[in-house]
Image (cartoon, rainbow, N blue to C red; front, side, top):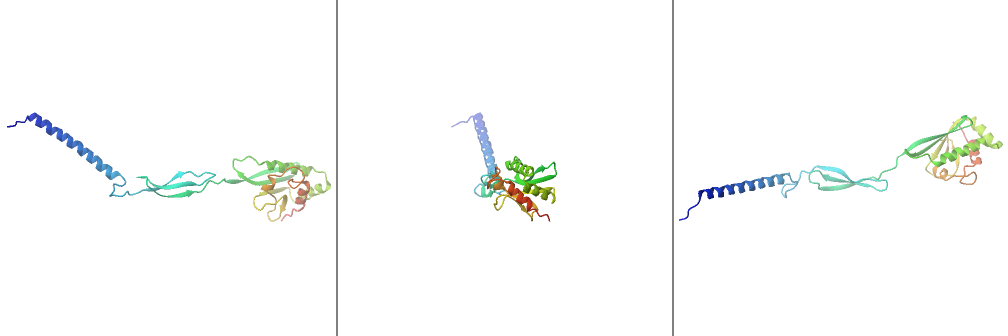
Length: 208
């Protein structure tokens, strides 16, 4: 006949109950994980799709947005972000001559933070030279211009390249191309804003 110690039996049962409780906790934890996971193999994720920037756009290259599920991080597509463009703004530069009796307002485009382009100083220098010229033909051109007004626009243009300073009757302004004036220098030659060029432009002015 085999006898069992009651205390041993109670300890054995207590140990089994603790083991059972531990396993039950693990099972519950597993069930919670299964329900909160995006896909347990049987139940698919109820995706919440959001577009997120994964590669920011720069001035040199396009960026990229990716559609990502905020729950499980699964992705389902991408779309480009256009590269950044420099935003030019309209700016003006005023040149006053003959004790403020004659004014030229240069209209040009540049970035908001750009310094004044060097050609503005060149334009002013050449206009000062024209007004100071003692040549009769140049003086007549200045006097004739003043009879038509005392404030004129000089528009810097960016399309359809041409050389020199000209009067545009349609725009009621003098015009000059950015690419030409940006490299213009000196007092003579094809790349210079000459007195003759300015005289002819002044004589061409027609006010409507």
